Length: 101
Image (cartoon, rainbow, N blue to C red; front, side, top):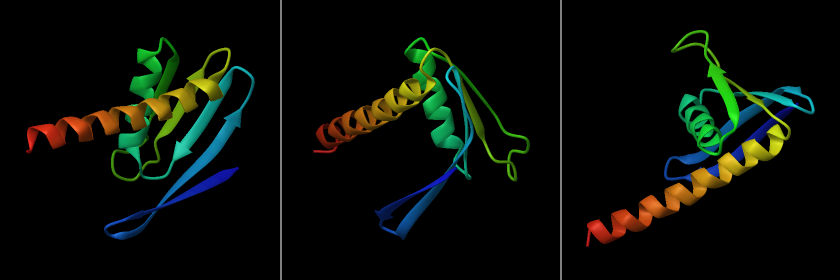
């Protein structure tokens, strides 16, 4: 199953392709097309929440990053990590606005 997320940015429409490779009760494996930064942030936030995850990329420029999440509810771990990225980005924006006044 593939998911394409479209978002408007200053440079037009940004598309992100997420492919679900494995979707089991205790394991979720996804590939995020050309988005190592997002995969790294997801991995870090899952670990901060005491989850278990890892990612690999076969080639630093040509490979697709693959994120593996394990646990009793890997989908929830992934969604919670995604929500935490949004919270962190909003907090960073507020701090930048204060600092740049």
